[in-house]
Length: 292
Ligand SMILES: C[S@@+](CC[C@H](N)C(=O)[O-])C[C@H]1O[C@@H](n2cnc3c(N)ncnc32)[C@H](O)[C@@H]1O
Ligand SMILES: Nc1nc2[nH]cc(C(=O)O)c2c(=O)[nH]1
Ligand code: SF4
Ligand SMILES: [Mg+2]
Image 1 (cartoon, rainbow, N blue to C red):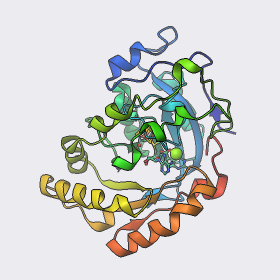
Image 2 (image 1 turned 60 degrees about the vertical axis):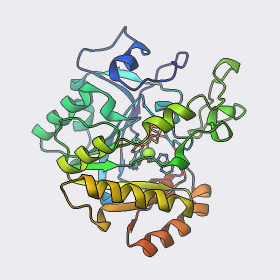
Image 3 (image 1 turned 180 degrees about the vertical axis):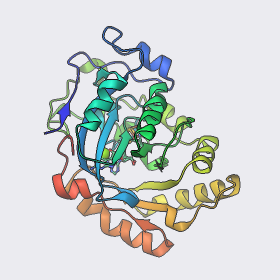
Image 4 (image 1 turned 135 degrees about the vertical axis):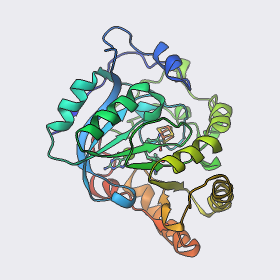
């Protein structure tokens, strides 16, 4: 069974958009110089995108500069938990699995300087690396597939959609969330998320520097005009072709129940526009279980 690391302590304040600011809000005590805050590290099948079905080791960093209301990795964004692991420890654990593919995800993995070092070490060892990123940060690092998921207006945590506004209950991962009155949501991230969620320069640099896929989370047909506008802007700005086959529509849903509501419409939209559809295999297989 994969190993999970989490830290039992009060949730940190909202994570900021730079690593330094982020580090100010996390444990200093046991942090190695070259390490990363790891929320979970596990072996599974790539569930999304053009490599769906490929056995892969997942390294999930903690901390994000955005706060999508639907985030399926709540404990890396809204209430980040993690243990600090040195690169040596991370690499040893990756090497303990029989896999050629590594997926670096989060949270937002490109927030962290050490993500670039980890990617270089993985490259030296011959691994194929996929980085799951929201596309707001570019880093100079060897990446075999930049899996970019630019965030649409429908991701913004308005007060009505703020997950911290809900009464504390079992979390999506089956753990109890500790949410007191002090950290109850009231849409405080709405503006911050909205102003940070798209960065055309970072997106352009990402598609120009790495093999890439653009993976849009679709909640309903209203998302399409924004996807088409963003693609037109990106195609204008980038010096590399962005083919329809590089554009994936992925249904929003952290659970089988929710996916049952979104996937057929998303598949029809993909056909209508000539884009790819990507399933969420891991949700079909294991629902919202952690470490899958
Ligand atoms: C948790 S994110 C981490 C990487 C990065 N922060 C990002 O958003 O791309 C991993 C992937 O899950 C997707 N995702 C998160 N919550 C989702 C949901 N409820 N339904 C569908 N996709 C979701 C993201 O869009 C992204 O493609
Ligand atoms: N199986 C599986 N495939 C995935 N592809 C991208 C994931 C992610 O959270 O970034 C993910 C994930 O969490 N699990
Ligand atoms: S950008 Fe990714 S990790 Fe951050 S809140 Fe959105 S889905 Fe979650
Ligand atoms: Mg996931």
